[in-house]
Amino acid sequence: MEIDKILHSGDAEDPKSASTSSIPKKGGWITLPFILAMVTGISLAYGGLVSNLIVYLIQEFNVKSISAAKIFNVVNGCVSIFPVAGAIIADSYLGCYSVVWISSLISSLGMLLISLTAAFSKLRPPHCENGSNLCRSPSEFQFAVLYISLALASIGMAGTRFTVGPMGANQFDKPKYQGIFFNWYIFVMYISTAVCSTAIVYIQDNVSWAWGFGICFAGNVIGLVLFLAGSGFYHRIKPHRSPFATLGRVIVAATRKRNLLLSLKSEDYCQDHRNKTFIMPTKFFRFLNRAALKTEGDAELAGSIRKSWRLCTVKEVEDFKSLIKMLPLWSSALLVAVPLVIQLSMVIIQALTMDRHIGAHFKIPAGTMPVFISMSTCITIFFLDRLLFPVWEKFTHRPITTLQRVGIGHLLDVLSMAVLALVEAKRLKTVQLHNIEGHDNAVVPMSVFWLVPSLALAGIGEAFHFPGHISFYYQEFPASLKSTSTAVVALSIGIGFYMGNALIDLVRKTTDWLPDNINRGRLDNVYWLITILGGLNFCYFLGCACLYKYQNVENSTDASVNEK
Image 1 (spheres, rainbow, N blue to C red):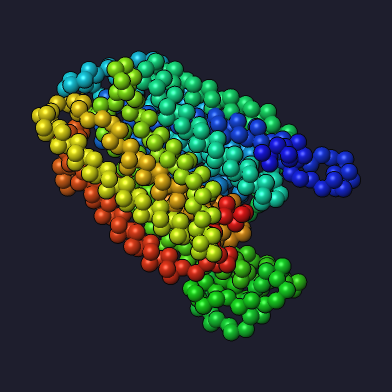
Image 2 (image 1 turned 180 degrees about the horizontal axis):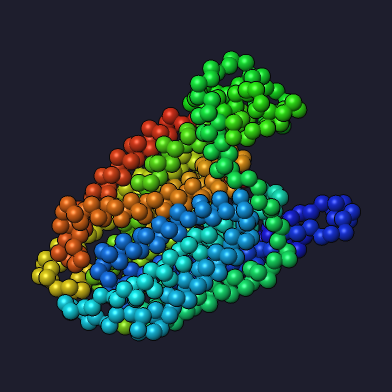
């Protein structure tokens, strides 16, 4: 592999510069094992926690199925929303390195606590037998320990998983080597997810929950120790002013000058010192142009800004406008996340009610079902990169754009929910046929593999829209916000989890489709509702995509295609 040729040479360092410097350059490929060790450890901890969390809450804490699904969504939402806070702290105060190791330590404490709840019976309510109506709820103390452990684990994983990636990329100067690193980064994350969804879940279901969570805790700690062991090799970028502060300055400065008349002369606007020519601000959101309008006392005689909260450069104003232009497209991603959220939680509940046997002795853990999404995504990404996209470019003479890729993923997500609705309708007919609606925890004589086609379709859709979203935002975000562009994708996913919870609450309050015993409900109607919402969202996305004009690239293409 190409990485083998450069593994011991740093980041393709110039021999002349190396010979003239007595201090070895930090960063490069020597940091790869230490950073990937952290990725592996935190991915094992995250996957081991969320893959089987719903089953753990139902079986060990006597939490009702729908409530367990909501807790699951809250945990995933936190892991997806808090990376934005981690990015702000890393860029403004501590740097990526400190955020990564501190967050990993916090997640280790959370995993330790969750392991203790599994190991000591006093931290859990008495076990509830299947079909019993006398199940005891957890005490306030038991709930407190559970929620504290989940909060610590969620916050820590959020600060680590989406910050260690940019830190790894910071070890290299050339985009080519950064791309190679991200390939390894994503590969390790998916492999760790597959291990958690299979081996770890199997241990939790068939050996003990304490062993399962304990292995994840150990992986987290080992990853942290190995990461710290490589501290002397890392290239650390010093924190600078948060880009979010710059956005705030634009709003404040424009508001303060709201009564001023805009000038038609470019020299009346503050320019970036790196620009040799004067640039006029665009007419889009003209109100914000006042932030760059120079008034007496705003700037020094040499041209530097004296009052940063009263004057911004034209580039800073235009960067802020570019984010506003992307908001409609970003909002369409929220309803893309909702079907995935509902699918991840409800499919596990469905699997608990279905025949999960392979042969006479082996039984598939319900928490393993999402692995079909991961496997489908991995296979599809390889297929797209090596076959479909090259063929597309050969016949159309133009690469597929990022928004085209996202749109295909949107459509496949809608189709996956429609397929899932049809499968659930068949499951409910089987329930009625065998007259087991009134039996709690009854297993329907229907193979769990009926769920696989919809999960595979969702994985194919994710292979299209998830890399497409990341590539789009990375290309279109201002240069000062490149490090936080991926956090925007995570934020949309996190909000999607909370929107999924809100949708579940709304359905439960207004219909009888989602009782705790789904054999008595109409989960298929929920899926059809999400299918309709997804279809409307797809139309909304198409409108936004047609009106959007690419800003920072001439052709918005996937990174892998550009490299080719």
